[in-house]
Length: 196
Image (cartoon, rainbow, N blue to C red):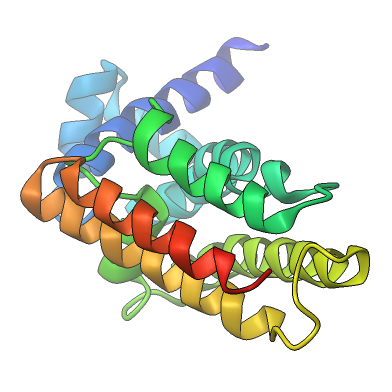
């Protein structure tokens, strides 16, 4: 990797860490520069402004990380109900990238930035739509192979599960504890059994 590309990547990674902890609005370019130890000129060589950098964080840091965590476990699964439960358990309990005290970075960006910035909205929507499509397709496949009841509306189930995930992430952040996750996971398990 060329030095210029390494510098850009370093800025994105360090900026993401700061933003995940502090929030996008309260993290300044000066904070990012101080943390990365790059010059202001180097920052502006790579990004015309903070928002361009924020969209790059979504596309280059969040998207690959979240695709591996949120999407890949649902691709090619025979039993989507089991895969969805395992996915949620992993995201809430085992995933070391997602910290309980800071919530879900995609959710944080969505809540903080999409009302004011269409570029953020579009970048996040691509990621979320992909998750919706993969989960919906997995449930549809599960209906065909007998793991999911025929009458299940896979789009409604997907939206319900995703909404529950984002909601419980916020409760976890508020409580600063994974205890609330276990309540959600137990009820999710009960709900998924009704879809068999």
